Structure formats: C-alpha cells, structure tokens
Length: 238
Image 1 (tube, rainbow, N blue to C red):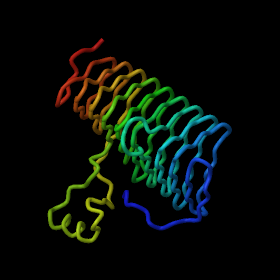
Image 2: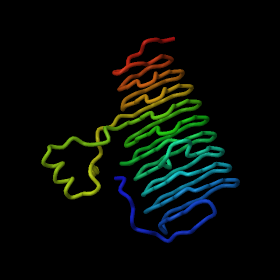
Image 3: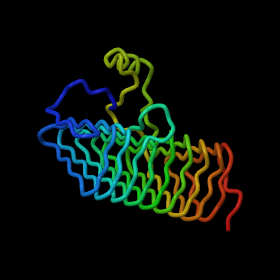
Image 4: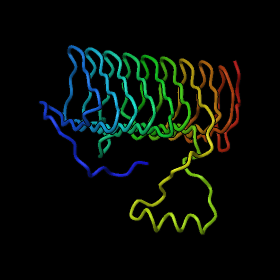
C-alpha cells in the first residue's frame, strides 16, 4: 500500500517545496504558513489543508484518496533523524490540531482515521500506523523511536499464498490488499510515553499515564497509572 509512485501529475513549483497533484485534488494553506524543503504528492481525490501559521519543514507527504489537515501553529519538522519523516495517507483521514510539534512518521490505510489534539510533542523516529482508529488527545509527550499501532499491519496467509503474492508484487514485497486485524487505540491527555515504547492495538489510556522505556503494551486499559515491562503491566495507580 506504500509503493513508490512513479506516475507524475502536473506540478507547480513553489518556493521552499515541491507539489505534485492530480487535477481532482485540493491543496490550501492559510496566512503565515511556512513550508521548507517539503515534497508533497496528492493523488486521486485528495485534500491537504494547512491552517494559519503552521510550519512544514523537510517532510515527505503522500496522500491518495484521503485527507490531511494541519492545525494552526503546528510544526511538522524533521528533527535530528537522517531521513525526512513521512506522512502517508492512503484512503484515510488524518487531523492534526493546533500547537503540536511532530517529527514522526504517520501512515494511514484502509480508511483509517487518526486524530491528534493540541500541544502534543511526538518525537523523531516514532511511527504511528493507523488502519482503523488512533486518537491522541492534548498535552501528551511521546518520546523517540516509539511505535503506536492499531493494526497487525499484515494479514496471516498460508505460505503458498504469500509466496505467490511476493512473486506478483516484486520488488514490493509484503504489500497488502486486505485489511489486517485492527482495534482502536486511544491516548487521552497529559500522558508520557517513554523512548522505544510500543503501544499496540486495543490500548486505551485515559489521563496522566506514564509508559516506561521499552515497554510493550498490548490491549491495556488504564487511567492515571504507570506501565512498565515486556509484556507490559500496570505497577502503580494513583
């Protein structure tokens, strides 16, 4: 679902970024928007809305039959990682509220809906994968190299089917045409997620939850607690 796109649309070069878009796509930006060294590709019927005074720097954005909305004063920036972070929306909807600092990869497929509130910091090399529903509230601190997945990302097939698909799709191995198993992920407000933490499908955090470094959290529901370990467990509730 995330193949490199070789087909080119009519393009318009703007100071600081490159935009390639289909005739059916819509791109709008408000007053004071700053876009630097970004690559934007809009395919099919896609929409990209960037609200007033937002900043987009060194990001690669690819939307196919989906939508992305970036709120006022939010900063989507590269940070210290070697490669540009990526936003990929393939038949989905990503809404980023106001006053966020985001340096992460975010990938949506299969009609997934991802909503990020206000005043969140999501750091370098973190990856959000949404095939169903990921909701992140307000004032959350999400560290480096974290994984937030509402999906298994791949379906389980018998070896003979996977082999035939690999032959047909080569060199794009592991592509999916069917939606994997998913379950909603909810992260409320004022949460801290430590470096390299893994948040898997079915997790629901309320408010003031702390997730320790390297924790692997699956299908846990907690409010005002501390989560540590692999597999993760709740060790403290206020």
